[in-house]
Length: 545
Image 1 (cartoon, rainbow, N blue to C red):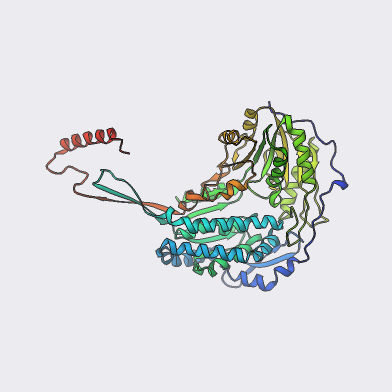
Image 2 (image 1 turned 45 degrees about the vertical axis):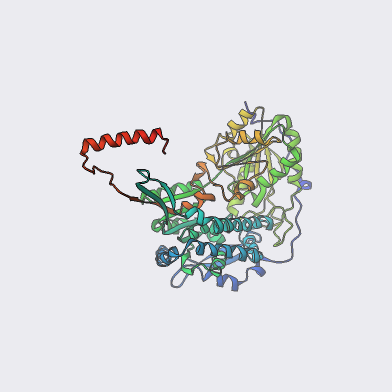
């Protein structure tokens, strides 16, 4: 059996001397990079009529007010759909290459002006600048991919007809219409515009409800996409409380794209299903990383740092469970813990910090609860384990827990913070069984020197993406391949063919030549049936599909 109650590597919580060092500040302040004039300009892109009811956001790095934004009502959502529906037919009538050209121009503008959005992402999420840059990378790659590949994905495709030569069948792709797109706070650039790009190039309009905390980033992306040539009414942005505005977004949508928690995803799916409207849902995960006995331990330890602590662990595909072969567990854990303790924490609006802040007191409380409950029940803190109010109101150190047992919440619940639990295994079969012992199935990671062996184990893991000798970036960055979850991690896929075809309806247009598919040329019913029975046998013998 896999040992989930392994001997503690460290007997006590690390002391003050083991605190993660602080990164240089960088000099610039959130107030300086997000002045009221910028907030007012971006807020003009929110669909909210009349005298707006303002909703305030907080800068995670300081705890101070960041912005006051207009709050949309369900009536505003209806207006947003009306505007989008009026704009969509003319956009859909353009050739695919004309629509794709907008994405390619957006790609260039994004790379040129990335510092603007890096400041916004950091100001709204508190993440380190390097992790904010991951979002720029992901969006640029998606824009390039769909800008180049959309024509191939969407072009008419010929298929074999009912009768060879006599029946001509073509599969066409038509836009759904207006997509209802609900995006979360943790990756505000990638999960707002990154998911909207394939919808646009497929000929749709989008009504987007970003999380209010990170709405400025989505509004900035909308502004840039309009500059690249997107008609302004084609992307409507509404802001408001999820339980109030979210249902209205789903209620009017021709298709729903949602990223968020599994609990909310179930509600979205139920509402969409009641209207016979399709939905794609990327939900939670309790992702595992498997370190095999033959792994390069230095490389694996470096990879584990990225896997567990990117964006302070607030990443659906990050690793929260480390499964390590017992023969190398102590050596690996020593290397991983040393690297984790050396991570520089900071909130400077510049490169240099290895990890930033959590986004809110809610995320800090959830992280703290998981750690404290586990320690109280007997788990050991190998590294981290503390909030860091000296750095900012929502900072928490990257934390490694050993001796975690199944009854502890951190073992099975998604923490969505910088916390990872370490478990030891003796056989690969045990490791696979433990990795799959979760209702989630989003991402996993396998580390071994033998790529073929890693792929064989990957095939046994019940997750939508598996990375061999990488944490998550290899699979997520392969934008021509589908990305999504199994089980309670969601439905549908982003990226690749599925990522754009989900926003279309398939239409088959079939033409018939010479004779109908019915008795003709003097044949009666019996003769017609006999002729076609013989014809079907011949087609099978000739290996027609």
